[in-house]
Length: 244
Image (cartoon, rainbow, N blue to C red; front, side):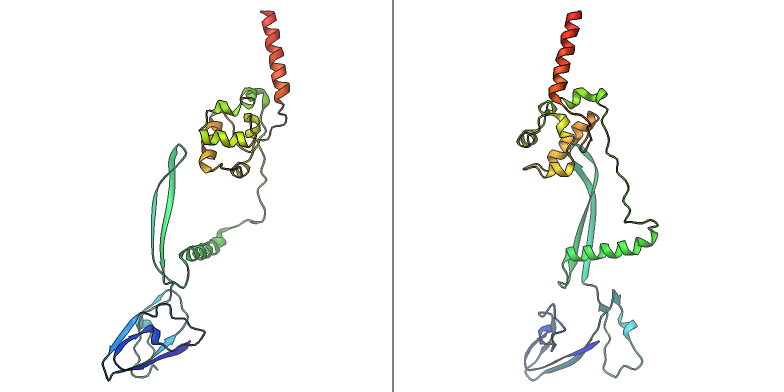
């Protein structure tokens, strides 16, 4: 707890800038009007400054041993003045069943709104940690799917041109040197997003098409050999034609 003072005489306004403070205190709104003095007026006051949390009413701050002339006022310790939130529908690719959260945060200037959100999120996480009954350091073992080549050979060995992508997505794959779908599905989403000019919109476009084919990103393919595949396919077609 600290005590600061204002002692001003003469005509003119009294503002928060007139508060006499040391280096440990900062007045965030020095333009705040407090009083207006006449020609021979004098304004003298002492303020008690202390740390606290949330909102405290003047009634709660009253103490029996306060000297005469002390005026308790409501104390608002939170740097966040106002928060609004809206939840609306959001579209990702062709899907429209996503929700989007928008936050509006007003502060007194002592903390940035984004920092206030980050810190409050940490507080919430810490408060809910009591419900965590497992070791967070243990990550679940992830098993990469292995493609059954017998079932989807044809899809793997199709060119990416057959996906009928938008011009932007097609150009990105071409610049990345990806010719076959079998090469594409072995890439992870993170790897694809590192591709030049390849954004989230292109990623979602390709994901939707791959899902329809029973495929996706980050798939492990034991053997992918286009040259051998097409040679065997040509040989098989030739033998079939001879039998006919």
